[in-house]
Image (cartoon, rainbow over all chains, first blue to last red; front, side):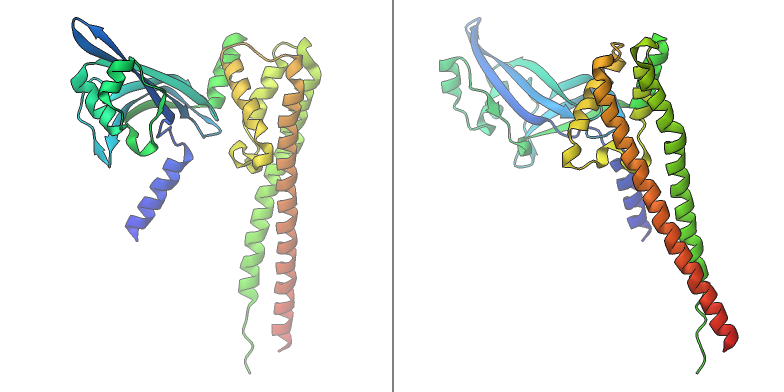
Length: 162
Length: 146
């Protein structure tokens, strides 16, 4: 009984101001280039961070975007995890975020395997198409932010102006 | 046959519904008699008075408890676009202009709807409370007669 009450209270408190917990419409492009006789890869991951609260803003938001397959995290590399950040996410806003990471063959292989993309094809063409990453293959970890009432932000700004 | 005394039940029912009616009444009155006239005055002052639109938006940004912005139905989704745009502009110090007046009127209208809903809820619970009081008096009388 006590446990259910504690869980319910926690759910209520957490539900009051939920921070963005996932990357909206995550997609990426991988470029391949030859540098010093070896293939070099650059990944550009883009997506959105949505704040569904009506009166809470999230400031200095940052999180690790972690790739995983069948619930198992891909090995750590230059592409996994990557840190995303947004200076401010206001109520009802979806802030676009973009992160660029670079690495070699060893780094990119697990990612290409997860997305079922042929490695040789990427090297040959030099760039992939824009690939949508399924929600089950990407999650946010080590989320950090400051939560502030939008009313106090606006009020502070109005007084500053006056 | 002994008659069961329900008067205590009616008394509690009356007290609780009266309390809800009172709380809703106070909330509705505060919004209708204090907040809304002030916002109207600020909007009427227009651009001439420095930052009156900004001040009006600040007041409207703190929503009426029965008309919280996340509770709006699909038809009111555009409200979220207004808030998103105005929040960014006010926080960046850009301020609001006469062109924004229609949007502020929409927010004020939403607040009025929330106040009306709170007032109607208060009246509903006051009627329930009256009904409970009537039942209480009737129960006491019938017990005294028995």
